[in-house]
Length: 285
Image (cartoon, rainbow, N blue to C red):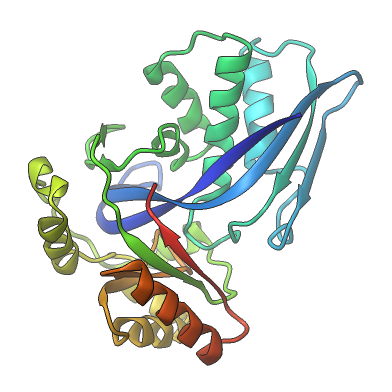
């Protein structure tokens, strides 16, 4: 049985540019990935049906009939890539559902990459990203676990070769946010920013940029869930914290710190302050 690490996505910044005709939104977002991951175990089986199982702390609230894993299988069969092959897939959910950490999107991307490689489907990056977009809006950016910039131009994703080496505290306040709901209520829009990609290679310049940036969805999320504001303010006041904000459409809150030691100290304090919340110290990959 093959084990696949499916890493979580973090939006370091997010600008909502405009609403498109199909009810989706055009966004500009600087994205990274950190070493918190779901684990996917996959094995080809003999039988008439797939066996899709979810385990782990965050297996609840996931539909067994409608999820990104079954969506990938359905799509690849529709394209005649898998034909009559059946699989047993067990997903250990370590990334909270509805947190803005992209667990489901990362799962889908990891499986698309696995099938492309294992069955030699010969899908280049453009083709696999096109398939990924049919599963979910965030799936294409998760195809490559590299720092990336969603530019706001149609389907354009710039991949950055440098590593950010950020120390990140993640706090999930046990709130499942509906992406559709948050975007539908959002009233904050921004102009696209012209990023100087070369500046992102320097830690100080990157941090300065993140301090100036924000997540346009944050005010909307806080209006609906005021307790998230309390978490963000608490994180921002901790020693060594450069910046705090939500990731994606929430509800997970992140804090970027100047050292792993400061993150670990913050983690202990946060766990005492919010004992029922899921908290973890992480590092970008």
